[in-house]
Amino acid sequence: CIIWIGAFVCEECAQQHKFTYGNQNVYIKDIYKELWDDYQLRSVCLGGNKPLFDIMKDYKIENLALAQKYKTAAMLWYKRRHRAIMDGDHFDTAMPPKDWDERYQQTKASLVKSGQVVGGHLTTFGGQAKEKASTASVYLGEKTSNISQKVKEQQIGTKIMGLFGKKPQPKTLEEHEEGGATPIEEKSTKK
Image (cartoon, rainbow, N blue to C red; front, side, top):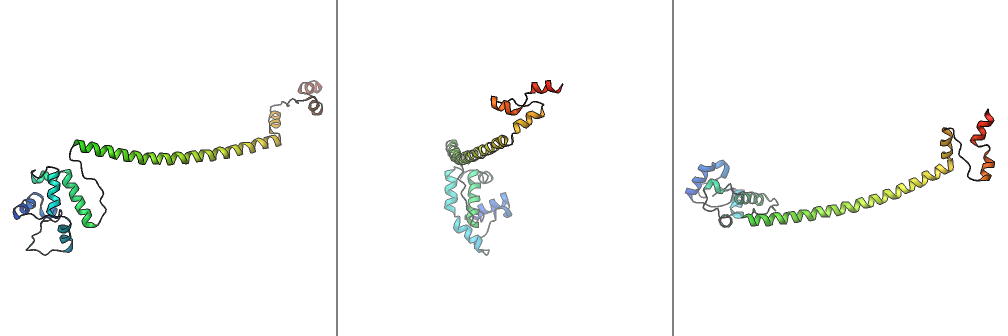
């Protein structure tokens, strides 16, 4: 029996596997002359010859040389799947494509699926960005309003103009009379 794929083989095939891969890589076990532990029995119960030969027929690799057969994507997938089942791990990797048409369909389905996921993420991100922008706009509006109010209250504009030696011109005649002399009059009185 070949433990790593859970399949029974004849003695000649077992020897060929040992010779090609070495017993440490394929783990050949005699069904009559050796003791079996639970893990090894589980491998045969969960594996079996039928699923192994079915996949070889589906992928048309049953007549390949032994060394080529186990290097194919189908057999590597079968081995990984068998090991995951043996260890109780979740295995959801799709079977490899059998031809270019199937590869095209799988790639197309994968891109559509990933596009939907990305689109969902972008929609979520877009909604969050819109919400944040709206919040920022309200916040900035409030801050601008507060700053504008403080500028008016503290007459900062007048103070800034005073830094440059200019006095702001009054807007009305009354303000003009209350405000005192104009800058031109100041210059003439200082002489």
